[in-house]
Image (cartoon, rainbow, N blue to C red):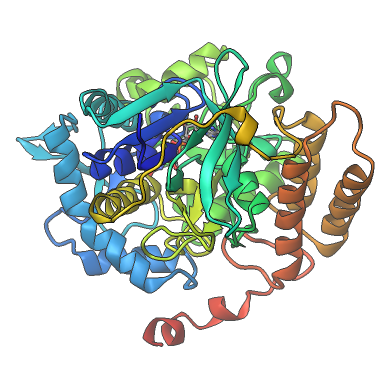
Length: 506
Ligand SMILES: Cc1cc2nc3c(=O)[nH]c(=O)nc-3n(C[C@H](O)[C@H](O)[C@H](O)COP(=O)(O)OP(=O)(O)OC[C@H]3O[C@@H](n4cnc5c(N)ncnc54)[C@H](O)[C@@H]3O)c2cc1C
């Protein structure tokens, strides 16, 4: 097949690009099954859009900019927030069945949103429903050729440095190369680089590693969002055995559940915003409580017997770990949840390398600044993905054959990458987790340097080590604390965070 575009990743970002680019010929590569192995499928809360009475794009822009601690890209924020209502309509037309009340979309309210504006489905099953509708549309679109079980290993460039092909491993472990004039990374996040994460197994940062390998600029790598409430499994199901921890959505605290320490004392008492304070503030408080005996989310009084029907996904997660949240407080731990940083792109999704675009969580458009506003990431994948697809549909692209034989592939590298080892995950958790300082970051960098100089046989793949090293260096270079980046050796706010009004007016 002649292909115009290769899209790597079948979450909301990848599917949005593919659908909008049609009738272009798109090769859609997915490491797992279409639409089910990424974070999009797991999304609970929903998608933010200013649709409610009294709400406006202006308010959404302001909330996004404020949550990002005033370092986000205002042009991108405006573009994404303004496109949100129409993007929701597009999903409805694709067949997405969002929750409704009296015939109207029901809008939920989440922390740091000034208005109720979260469109959701099946209560806390939004990702599942959105991916169902989008993947059905993809299967019905003739120009899109889906390759499931195909893991991209490396981007290949021509002599001018233009990305022209992708080296992959197929489901049988065979090497293959796909060729097209444009390649779009839509590979999701990096949560699996940390001991505790809410992210699926696919979030290994492979897209970032591949982009780094071909010289693409990466941005804001130090901005990793930690969610305050992942379910902490009992000792017999230690986190080391669970690659991903179930998420307990903020909506539980929105419904009145309270965070308490091991003695039952409220963790957030006396802290501005209480249990609904900004995500990074709550996450650090939970982390501190965990260091001193443990942290629990107590939903017994506020939600109690309503738990199963109000929060079916969270209820099932708790029960699968032997915890009945109707009668027990739920042990929680903060966990790596979202990467605000990523492959630097312009407002249209193009990276600094010719022929290479990036969209969704793997990209850094500047939308989220130093902290992501809840329910803005599905939105980003949807809006930026569709905009990029629209652009690709209208572009003149050179014609190429889609598959080239291995013999023309001159790539020499250290692939494939095994899943991240627990040793490296705990190093990242210790050095690059919720609290950082120069000493720990340097210890981590030395360990990575040793691994680069003398990689152990069968040990961690070098591209990942390089990526981790970039992340630690970014955290070391960012002096001061801002948003999700907390330096306990430099707790004072970084300059931009001190004067929001001046930044907003600039
Ligand atoms: C538990 C949970 C709940 C969340 N809830 C919400 C929410 O309510 N609202 C919200 O806005 N955000 C939420 N988020 C964040 C949001 O889900 C993600 O940021 C978003 O879905 C990312 O979409 P994506 O398309 O960029 O990546 P993903 O959906 O993660 O998709 C990545 C795709 O890339 C593929 N891939 C990765 N590497 C390779 C490779 N080398 N080769 C081939 N394919 C590859 C994967 O298989 C997958 O198909 C949540 C996240 C989690 C983990």
